[in-house]
Image 1: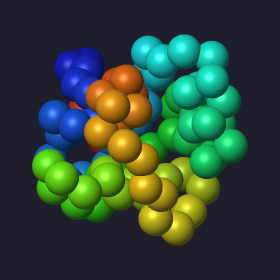
Image 2 (image 1 turned 180 degrees about the vertical axis):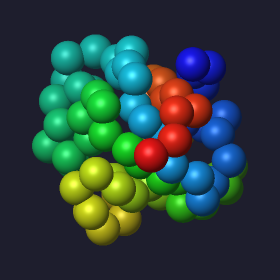
Image 3 (image 1 turned 135 degrees about the horizontal axis):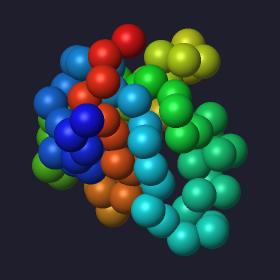
Image 4 (image 1 turned 90 degrees about the horizontal axis):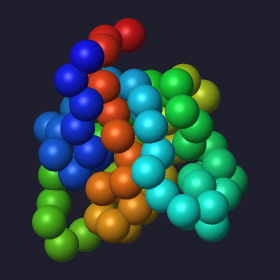
Length: 81
């Protein structure tokens, strides 16, 4: 399985979170937002200047906005649903 960070993947396709390479506080923030390892997420936008919008497909969440720095620490795999 090929892994990429969330900034590198195209929008509109589901990807599975395989690893979060962030510190304790950033991982806590992602957990409170409902983002967990093993969840399937979809990136909604492809903008360089606005926050990264994602949707957790596993929990059927609404849109979640995270910064590009945090998105870079979320590694996703190209494994499909």
